[in-house]
Image 1 (cartoon, rainbow, N blue to C red):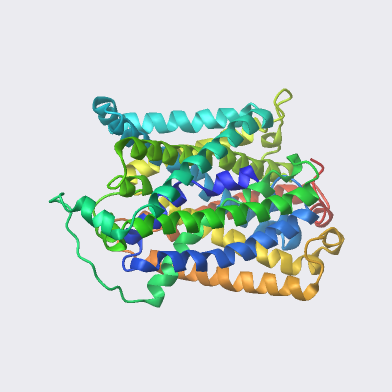
Image 2 (tube, one colour):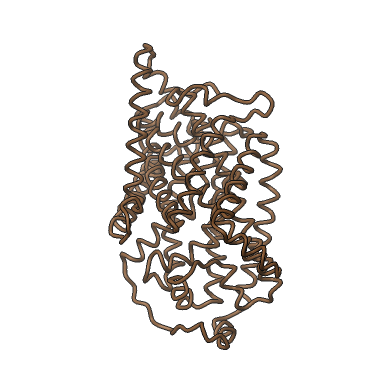
Length: 476
């Protein structure tokens, strides 16, 4: 459960509910309802993941589910886009966390050190050090991973609770009084008109906040009693995080007027900690800034675990070179798979720096995960027909009618979100084509398809019974 929770909570809660006022102009006071709408397809996808995990409790989660329920190509395409998107976002998080600690040191009065963190080369170097340090924790094995992750999760919830308590302790009138003496802060109250397309575009982006519970399934083979514990962990993660998200966002918007957030977001990057700093004592604002940094760091070990297990699963099936599935004899970690994924995350760090907008990485991830979750809902629909032997082990949704409703409605919602997100991206005004996440995603899928073609051709030449191979689970 900690793996799922820590993969979900991070930049998504401290940044996106507020910076969405820039990325989706006009959403105004409708962020919370958009959050609720975003949760619907996430819940359908979570149920599909949980059900499929009972039938296929092995490493590789989404790849394994789609390759055995639909076909190997779709399984690889879905999981490759997920792997690439999440690997890029791991780099984005490593890059974005530095300003949180910069502001933390500003709050402590260490201005010179804080300004040093703003230097471009310094920020990139520190981001890479953080990234590879957490990759190293994963390489040391699951015990070291556990000892790192669970204390970070407890600390994250404790410090996040301070944000919630602080937000509910103030009203808009308190905020207006607090900024009345600041001449540079000037905004006016307004009544926002509801626009359905803006609302849907915001919901599609906020859907990214619910991405991460799938990390539980990726390392399924390493869980104790996975057929029972994986679906329980997925359910608990989505419930705990969904509740935390809504209460957290509501607390901040109850203290800070949305008009102010929308106005400020056009000119600078906003965080929950920065918005509440107008109201809070300096010492408490500094603690909350530290909490935001911890929440971001908390993403990294769980997400690295998730993406590395996808590489491991591909290698087990020989869709990737077999040696990438090698396990370190001492740590029992797939070291080569971790290293490869972290190299891709390094691209995310550099891309965030040179593009100057971390939302590009977020958009790529949202596209990839919408496709991936769509395939999961389709997998739960088609598993009994395409692979009845594995379907017999699926114990969560035994009713055909319930399975159909979950799979069909989930597919409908996710396809709709994918369409809306794609239209928003293609209509965005950007300076270069590669700032459109859709084009980057198509390029990634083309690379994946070419890779699959080469490996599939090689497997065919070895006279392997591919039909039987991809209807059963790998040994490890």
